[in-house]
Image (cartoon, rainbow, N blue to C red):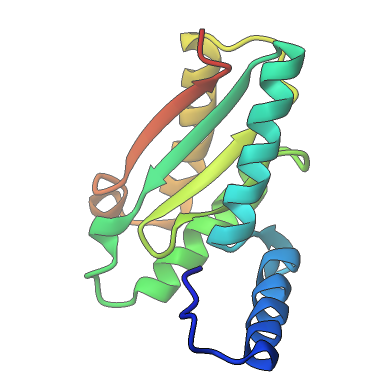
Length: 152
């Protein structure tokens, strides 16, 4: 957050207080925890450090939905995707905005190994559940990327 030097001390404290509220409280959708961008990136940083320290793999999945935001009802589409993720992921998986209204991030922590088969299983499960709720034309506009940590 960039703060101009001309603000008063009281104003600065107010900005810090409002910023901390955003970063400390998760956004909730239908009782499913879905973090805002700031909190999600904070948790990603913590999990990456934990992964590097323990040398246990961490998988980050990025779901790019930016091409869906020009559709008729983007909030409904986001709700459908969030609902599918809630039913497709483990309780320990962390989900939230990687880039608001563009990319959803999912942190799979506590995995024992990461290979093409385990990634394929994740994609299949999410795709199968999306197919039950969304039109295939919309699903085909979604891109998925994976990042594995720690980087060797």
